Amino acid sequence: MVNRFVILIRSVLRERLNLLCALVLAFLVGASAPVAQEASAKAPSLATTVLDAEALEAPGDDTGPAAEIPQGAEVELTGDAAPGFLAVYYDGEAVWVPAQHLSLDDRPGIDSGMTVADIALLEPPTPEAFVREIILEGQAVILTGTSVYGYDAAPHDGSGGWIDARDLPQ
Image (tube, rainbow, N blue to C red; front, side, top):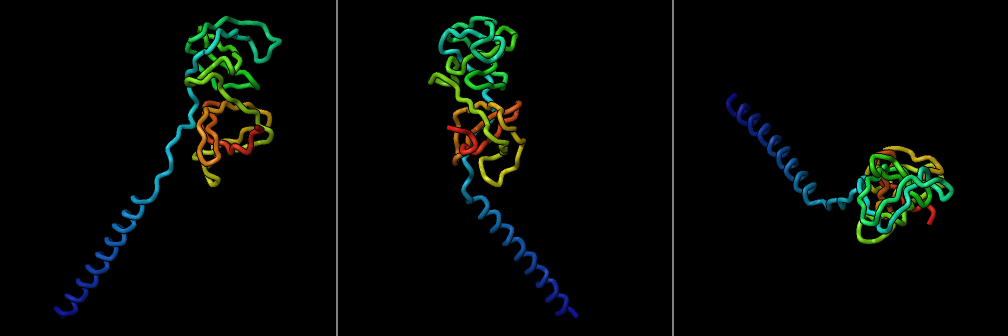
């Protein structure tokens, strides 16, 4: 009877030891796996004017001026875009500025694109990623300048994500 009990205890301990070894091995393999490149797809909140910029009431060259924004002014991006124009908050008012008059870093201009079909805004920059939302055809998106594996960071409606660069015309 004692021998059976000892054999049973050894068997249970061996199974637990095997399970523990498997867990440790799985942890070590997971910890050594390559980590995906971290990159921000969130909307930049601030931009700087690189030239004196005439702020407009609406996007387009045929709309009335709303204000004059001096060179070097820091403005808050609203996240709205139209071909060649970005919406910003200036003096507490939402106005439109030509995108080439703004900068996110040391180079002038902020890129934007117009969707030519409904496209997915993805959580990480991978084909099998979670779809945060669908950006409808004809919508303008701001491109932050960050690109990973053929995907461009593009905020839309206050949500940051990634779009396949092939989904925007060049």
